[in-house]
Image (tube, rainbow, N blue to C red; front, side, top):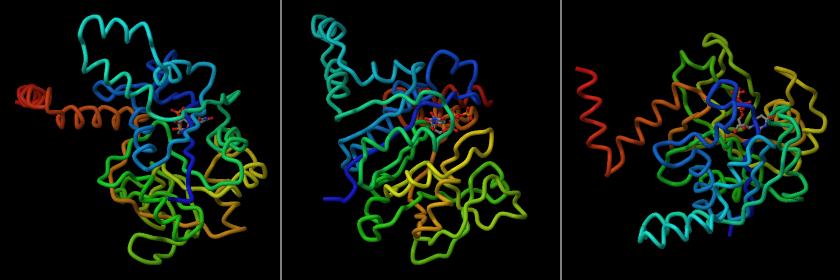
Length: 288
Ligand code: UTP
């Protein structure tokens, strides 16, 4: 049994990088073929052994709650029409886990969103999975971080290696390699130029945090865009207790970014047994 039992998934942001699609629907509900992004995230939490999940939503994001809820009428119709596979898939979805919801009143930043989780997670370490980020890996990314946490007992930021000429798109860490893939964090730098970047290790949208993060968030003043930034809170926390970074095995897909979304969609479509071969043929003919 891991010391980490709860997962928090923030999904209350405006998604301005994906307008107009995100004007009236959450970006976390953008589908990758036929599964909304946030379903991949919830499935990763469950595959990591976390069955207590808190999703931070907003008044604009009702469809997220509906997606994981039971739809009795639709189930009756599928049963009547003999669509057993579809019915089983829907039932699996609504039985996935114990999902709780809380609404962030205003999207004032990821750090602010996390404040709403304090009462739910209480005095326990928890996993944080960004609702707009999918990580494809052999062992679920969150489980990799949980393993390290159970050994280390300190907050851990999931890290991915990014191309050096693209570091200016990410939050980059500086730190000391402890062993294998584990780093002791020294600093976090938002979008440095390649010349100034201390490493090519980017913050990857997955974390295990100790409850001390909540104290740090309370002390964090609004940063970039007037938002309470989680990276600023982690920087404060680092002055009180060590924070580690773990270079996880896997590939991160940021669905909130248009290009990444399109590439992820194509990649996942190509990997499907049912439609993959036809998609491949179509792409070939387009590229001729
Ligand atoms: P992002 O910073 O990528 O989301 O946050 P955003 O603010 O919606 O994006 P843009 O820049 O306007 O396009 C990562 C995750 O944190 C959630 C988002 O919903 C996303 O899943 N988030 C962000 C919140 O829950 N609340 C916030 O105030 C901000």
